Length: 200
Image 1 (tube, rainbow, N blue to C red):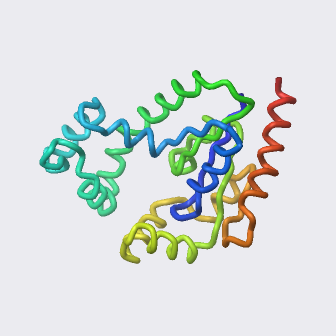
Image 2: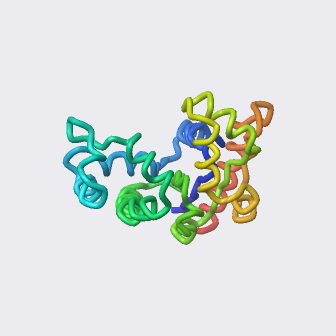
């Protein structure tokens, strides 16, 4: 099965594109969703995170206090790396297990930090969703109600737009709604079906 790694900066529209592939009956695995599941109450990863960061990162009900953890890792690169060293291997293990259950010509694996984690070998093709940084900032401001400084720090923690585009096998332009996302996805859908058929 052809594995397409979908990635892009914050606010580029990864979820929207993944949703369109999903509507075409293509399985979509989401690394962020898996990471969320891994840190739910009772999960071993949450215990490990608590041991690494202390009980202060837990909410009163014992669940993960995501905003506190977010504040911690965005102000401290060492803490961020510590969290990633716990979570990333577990996310990729889970993706591997879920991939083994799929039967489809190809699948989309949404991995926001695919390039940052140096895991391009995990997929067969890299699909980058692209838009200008100004557009990213505008979308995230509206969607997440974050300050400009916080949004900028998230963008600065990701690889640059130019680097992302240079690593792309396929590119979707999501600069604005005039770029007809569904048409771009349909074109790639046909390409992936064709590549998959030729591999078999």
